[in-house]
Image (cartoon, rainbow, N blue to C red; front, side, top):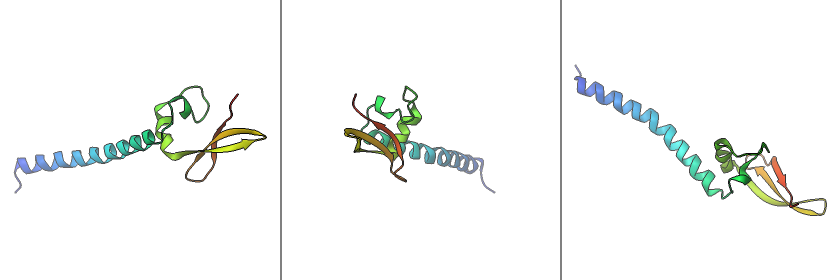
Length: 92
């Protein structure tokens, strides 16, 4: 028979494993988004007028490249996964 201490240790270990894995994933996601180097106002990917935490986390998946719109030099933000343009910003 297992002692109550062994069962308690198993429960604590299981709970910690369930909590540590998502916490690790979230912290890696935050680190990747932070390393993307975008300013907070720049991360308004869907143009709603403000940046949310979800926008910040999406920054890890989005790249930036120069592009031409007509004769104007602009910046194009695209998804790394498939290259789809998220938004294009041109100077006024």
